Length: 232
Image (tube, rainbow, N blue to C red; front, side, top):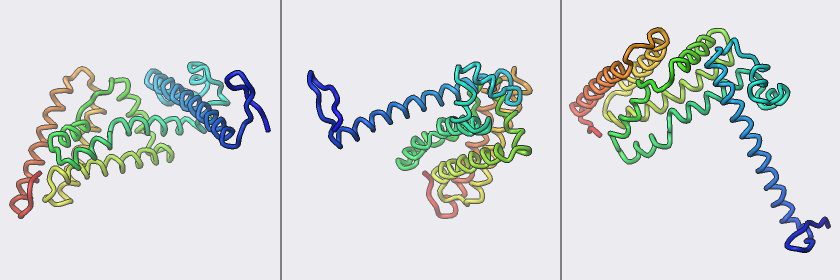
């Protein structure tokens, strides 16, 4: 039986202790891998924002991150996989599904409505909006990028559907779906327009769009109440 030093004497490594040491070692390796992947994503994002998706190669990411090209390809098979990982981090942060679930379950209309507002608000920089639109343009040319966007779109629609159903439960599902489409189109349009006209006061435009969403929700709730339903 192998021995390890412990508290001034050598101790036998039991099966249970060997398993514990193995788990600790695996956890440390996993932590290092996660840290390296996060670093690569941060560096890649900065380079994509500065130079554009097409103008940034893996060699540049390697030089800026200090991580060898071979290791990058072991972590991410392609630039598209880097984009997929970035998108997963961004969408999880943007949607904050746990907070929405709590708000829906507690029937907190104000919190749900505030959550919906994130679709028509722009917190990203102009450079980040430009990077997003450049990658979005790849949907028609790159099947991998198209699949990433389809998956994100589906996830966003599901969350919006849950939020709008909670806000106007008695309204027709088709009307809520139409409002969901409107919200996503307006939010996407704001991002693209910001690239074209960055000097405009987009906070004002965001509030106006929010007013359109509120008016539509009020109409849906009224229709639901008149049809015999109840408002949140």
